Amino acid sequence: MDTPLQNLAGCRVLLVEDEYLIADELGKHLSAHGAILLGAVPTLEKALALVEASERIDGAVIDINLRGQAAYPVADALEGRGVPFVFATGYSAAMLPDRYRHVPRWEKPYQFEALVQSLPALIHRS
Image 1 (cartoon, one colour):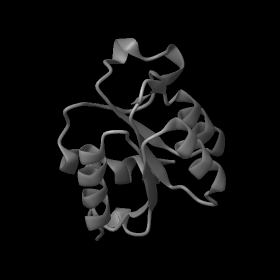
Image 2 (image 1 turned 90 degrees about the vertical axis):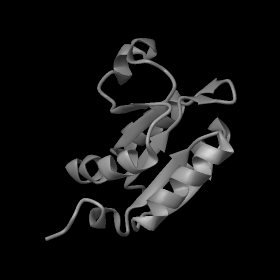
Image 3 (image 1 turned 90 degrees about the horizontal axis):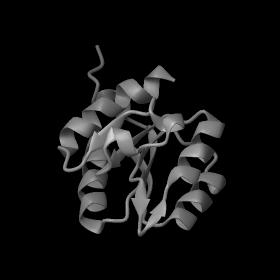
Image 4 (image 1 turned 30 degrees about the horizontal axis):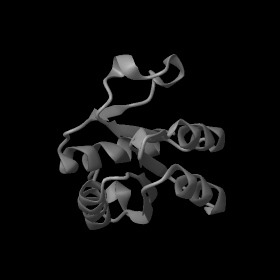
């Protein structure tokens, strides 16, 4: 029987985070559990370019505030492709636009391992 952590094996995960230390640590946790990290991108422009250039994305972790720019265009692009994602942010649920209230949200500071363990259910649900 597969454990949830084994279910990340081979999953292509996009990480959109502008804080280097958070991106580095979360990327290590994702990789340790078998995910293929497509990139830890710090800007809206780089994230959108990577979404456009990637043939397959199985899931994503998105920080909403990227150096003062909202990452909602990345969320829109992923939703348009049917890619599940989670917001990992300091924003409260009340701060999210109504159209994103359904998106799972991990409020900073979060535990890296707990976030990583929640991803297989999100990815394999879609």
